[in-house]
Structures are given as structure tokens and as C-alpha cells.
Amino acid sequence: MITRIVQLKFNHDFSRNTFRKLYEERNPATRGVPGCVEVKIMKDVNAPNIYYTVSKWSSNEALENYRSSEYFAETWPMVKSTLAEKANAFTIEDL
Image 1 (tube, helix red, strand yellow):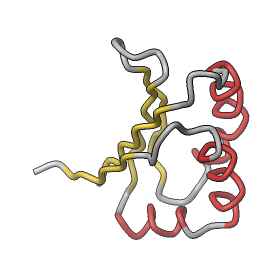
Image 2 (cartoon, rainbow, N blue to C red):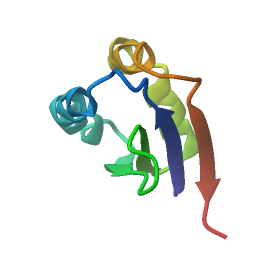
Image 3 (cartoon, rainbow, N blue to C red):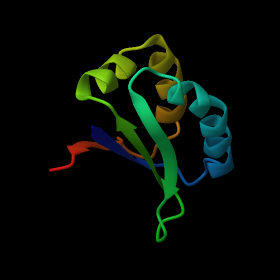
Image 4 (cartoon, rainbow, N blue to C red):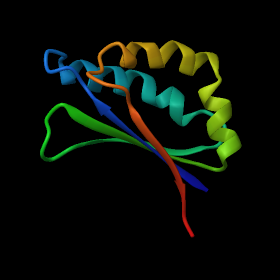
């Protein structure tokens, strides 16, 4: 099992409600991806324009299959265009 954490720093003029709406619309499909165990969104307590997506996957292969899917290719550009800087992503596993 692996965990993927992605930090998203949005432009200040971007409505974070828009991101939440997009997340709520697209998240059920993400949860249905083979190997996806859990997906959630978290907000930085000190920076109102920074959010995190935290997802758990059965394997790194399952995550990579998702990242190379048509669904991801449609969704990521919607998010990426609203970022103030490049997203920071980490893939970690329990020891």
C-alpha cells in the first residue's frame, strides 16, 4: 500500500470553492479507479490557498496506471491551470 500526497498552491485570484466543486464532481470517479483505496482533500491551516490531495493505492503500479489514464489526462489540466506554482508530489509507503 502506498500513499500519494500532492500539494497544490492556487493563485490567490482562483476561487477555492471552484476547486472544491471540481474535486467533489471528479472524486467519485477517482475512487472507482482500480487500486484506489481512498482519496481525500485537505487544506493547509496557515495558508488559505494551499490544499493537499491524499490518496491511498494498493500499489505504485495502480497509481501509475491512474496517472496515465484518459480520466487523469482530462482532470489534471483543469487543476494545473489554476496553480500559482508547480505542484509538489510525494509517494510514500509504510515501513
